[in-house]
Image: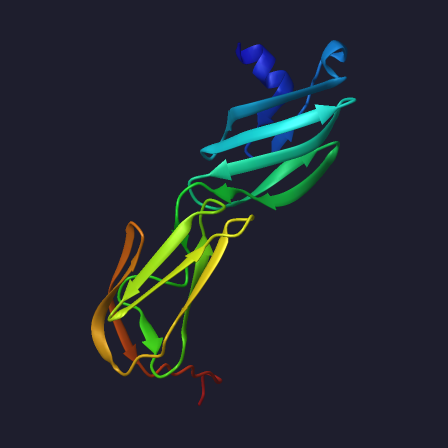
Length: 171
């Protein structure tokens, strides 16, 4: 029941703790899959001699979490269980014309990603860590276009010139 689960995993606001209170008779060796933690995170892990030997944290979108593991707290990223696009990309964005268009983000490891943009279509596959990248051919100024990435769609994308300006407030 819930008491046994709490001996294997505790999910606090600050961190996820693996093996917080494992009974001596279980310390030799074991593994669990599909345990749920805060933030819609699923945890799979194995242990030997009371120490975690491997683990996987997954969530619908890749996220940074704190994990207490073998007495130390460290920050790790979950693996995405759904296709995710990097936060820099969104509806109504402007992309630089006449330069290759690099799109990247995360998905389940091994998942095939198909990008459709204007008159282009390219495919790639997420690596073992879930990262993927597609580079589309340069486009002339124009739009609005849609970028379709499997089931996700970004709308109203324009191709043009991007200017980055900076300076002091008195300029």
